Image (cartoon, rainbow, N blue to C red; front, top):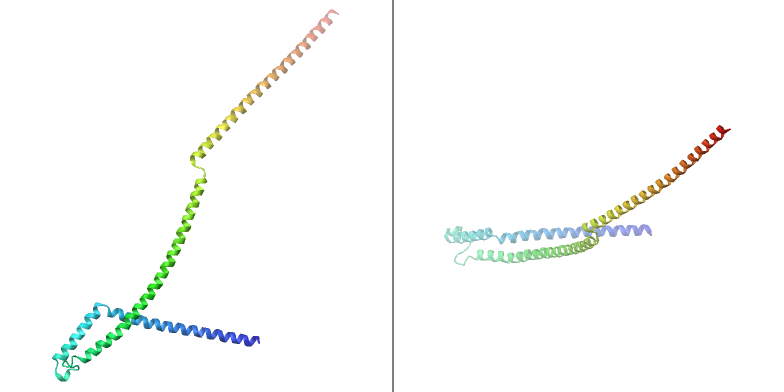
Length: 211
């Protein structure tokens, strides 16, 4: 069963591929025919075609009017029937070719309009996105500190640091004075002790001399 299903799927895929190829061929043939008819219709609308057709008709009439009877191929007495039929045939083919070229041009215009609409939608979306980003950037910039604010803050910080330095200097000066006072008291105590020792030594010397 699995092999049969696999074969059936393979055949269906091959059939789809073949159909796609046929569709592509039909499109290419239609495009080729349409391009050829469009080119012919554009050629018919050029001044060169009008001048050439005028020269051809004039030559036809002059030849069939002036040339010998045995060399004429259209009767002037009957109103140039062959020329009339040929021009009518050309007009009957020209009208559908012009309509075909116009339809193809309408299709191209429709595709171009759709592409322009999509491009305009993308541009509008991009502009809206950029507008939102600009608004967000403005809000961020508004929240950021300005130069003047930063300068004032730095100045206040410098002043605080200077005040702290002054206070530290005063504390160090007070400490040094207290240390000096304590050192003076210690020196005075030592001097008194040395004096007492000298007095005692002199008293002992006197006692020894009296004996």
